[in-house]
Amino acid sequence: MVIFKQKLICRAPFIRWSPIFLIFLFCQPNISFSQSELDRQLMERDRVYSVPKLTEESALTLPKIPSKNAFSLYQTNNRSGFKFYVDISTVQISDDDVVRMTLLAVSPKGSNNLTHEGFRCSTGEYKLYATAWGFNSDWMPMKNPLWLVTNKKNPSRYRYDLLESYICSGRIIFEGQEELRLRFKKGKLAKPRDRGRI
Image (cartoon, rainbow, N blue to C red; front, side):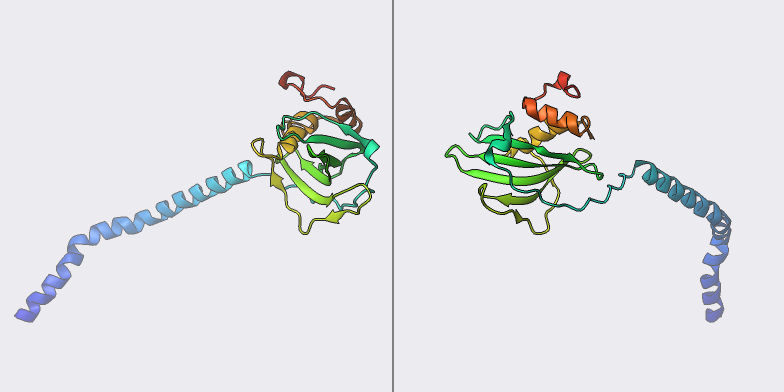
């Protein structure tokens, strides 16, 4: 008798809960369908709002280091005492939508720092390709240069100004290559209402 009662006790929960189990069993396909539909909608959302793939960067050939008189002064909001120049003849828009140019920074004590850099409006970034410490020296290419975000609060503020006032209109390049060169020839910071105009 004891054994019989134990069997009844063990089976009773199954008998009591079996209708709920059956309901859960029959409802499971609907739950799976809803989850599949949710996954599909999430995938569709990610597809619509995903960041577009950037164009593969073009191969780079460093230009010849120009003479000092090839550079033109351009305005910046930098307060470090440096003066900034660009060799307008090197301003170039490549097929990868990167604007490249040779720049010159002159310190308050007169030392010269030449750089060849690229700027990308779509991401607000710059890349330093090479540096040189004088007009009679050779380029020193950077090892594995990276794209970096410009910052208006650090000593390299001039890069931020280049993107904001000379090169980009939002996330696209202002104009064509000749228009960019004309903008640098004027060398003046673009006011917000003037951005997009030459």
